[in-house]
Image (cartoon, rainbow, N blue to C red; front, side):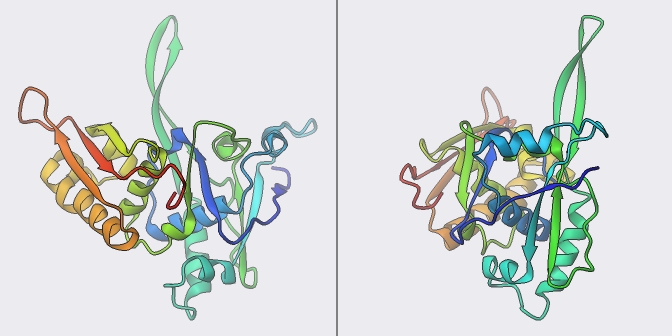
Length: 262
């Protein structure tokens, strides 16, 4: 693959901007990878269409699109996440970078085969190449061109939140919940189906099969942390139309149209 485009650095009060589709798609990763990924995304300027065009344009000689790269230093990592011990910051950064290669986005869709709709599970990597972790005090994240339409050239239907409001979170479930709330910051209401919620949160199979475990291990801890660390007033309820089986959830929180939090 060709050398990726390197993007200019962004201001310190950074925001993470992603297309809405990513918010509810499966993103199985640990908190450390989520921290690095969010910081790298925050360093991108998502609006210029030229960046998207360069990232996905096929090289006429190789037939391969270059993607784009973002350099993250240990200093930036510590500034974004001050709770990280400075003695272990570079090790944490390298470990997260190494693991990020195995992280992907997954979703279900349909393809037409002989006039019939066939269900297909799609999966794309965030980065296309393993990160070189021998560099002194920094790593370079080489984003896949396949993920570019969800992170670059964005003008509408996007989710945005300030990185600093996610930085202190200790649970990836809290982080994913924050992203969903950011998508609906104008209304303060999230209505979501059970399976869709489980996928978006990356809930373990034991929680997917048991709504009680999902409540105890995923929903309640996430809401508790967001209340305590970001002061968000959140109320929620399961939806049980016509019976006892939980088919989805409703989350209500104070709208934030002025962007104070998101």
